[in-house]
Length: 113
Length: 115
Image (tube, rainbow over all chains, first blue to last red; front, side, top):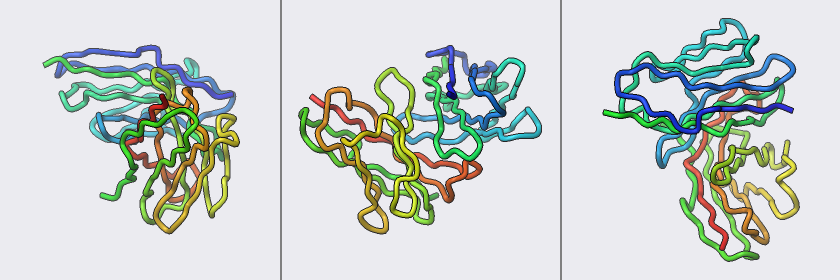
């Protein structure tokens, strides 16, 4: 069965600093991978997704993620965070042909001014 | 920009009572989903719905749960006899098509508290 682990429940970074949120997945074949963000009072918004091809994926709001098959990872990065990036971030995996997403536990990001 | 809406934002109910959580998906979307997140746990898939039928459901989605599209705009999740362990945030989502090549758009969630 597919599963996703986000090892960091809560991360605090300073505004302007770089960010990396970790995501590890368990799945036998090549997975479909996603990062979602949830701001307070808002729904989950898709930041980026990986299906195949280039392992470095660009998303919205200046985020990128890199698929590393050898490490079963799909870490999210941003070179310089802004106060508005404070939110909950969810990594998710799905299998080809499936409709459902399997989510990680989420990482809450706090930004220090 | 079109968005998925959910009502109410917070529902408090007594154990054993029936609750209906409501969602208005994006108007041209054909596939609808419910997920839930128990506090401190992962977001979990409950059910997907297409063409007035359940297309996939998880083990969580037992006989206590049902979904319905009563009219052209609403998509509802009914819990017949709520239990304490049903307390969670419930998210509705919709997509144009069922393939994951099509993004699932999520609503802001309904927080259900069962006392």
